[in-house]
Length: 430
Image (cartoon, rainbow, N blue to C red; front, side, top):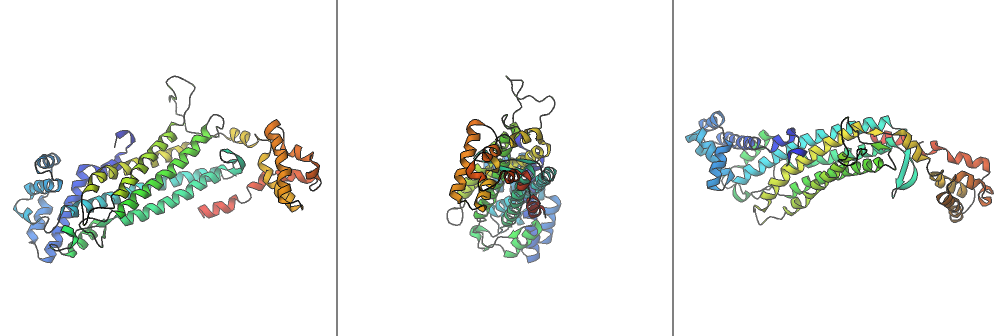
């Protein structure tokens, strides 16, 4: 992952030293379990814990010769442990170490991502409450529809990211499994107790059937969940980008002192952060398909998944971590232009009340078909010539024959559209 879109808190999980630390813990805990079974002497396990160390450069040097990363690690470990190292990795296979480590790393990454979502939820809730009753234009197809509130917009995103949090918690539980079952997963050369013991020590669940590797449907679900979260980030970013367009300008990314928007045009203030989020979301989703394709391995195992996961494990989690943190900052600092909100709300001469007039006509005894015709023909005058829908309706004899002029005006009450905001907020925030 390039440093531009990476935060140290997440990159540390994927650095070699953390990986080798987890490998060491797996091997050392396995030795303790083997002692309890009477397979290896207690002095051997003690020596592993006391003298066990590793050197990344030395491991790389050995791997250049052996072409095998786990063997290189074990060889280097033995150089520190001494003769007792012959008891390390008893009955185990490389995937026992690699897969269990990958599960542990993804669990670590998940904990950070869950915290990231919590931070975003906090920002969304604050802005939702702040603008609970800030009436703004709701749009469908990009066209003015009916009034909503900015608070409802934020509340909608809050509810979506609450669902994403639940999805990620479930995905973390599903991915955090331990497999130490030996070659082809039969436990022929290692007792299942070792797997149970290591799983408990590592804070993982036991994989019921591991066939030498942990089944990759778990990983497919995990990365698919990251893809869904990324898509939610993009939806949030896209909304802000639209609201920042010059013709709309209801919301705007914070523009810091000294910031420049364009190398050519000094006046520019572009939605660069949310555009960036849109691009990052594409990258996280791009890792979903390879994870899906990793599910179908040959027989009990092959390593076609290995190169894929060396990419997507770090890149997907690092990218999503950065995107969530950036999204939180954008929401937290988002500038709301209430004057533009009010201007846009009144831009179309009251057309946003057309449905209420339609319903009032049906309640007054007019067929829905005729009611639609009456309202639409007056609405089209606003579209074509400007003016106010209410004024045109007052001049329409078919309308006033059913709804007196004095009863038309109350149909243009903005409060009509916000009367259930409290109900929605209670559903979202309790």
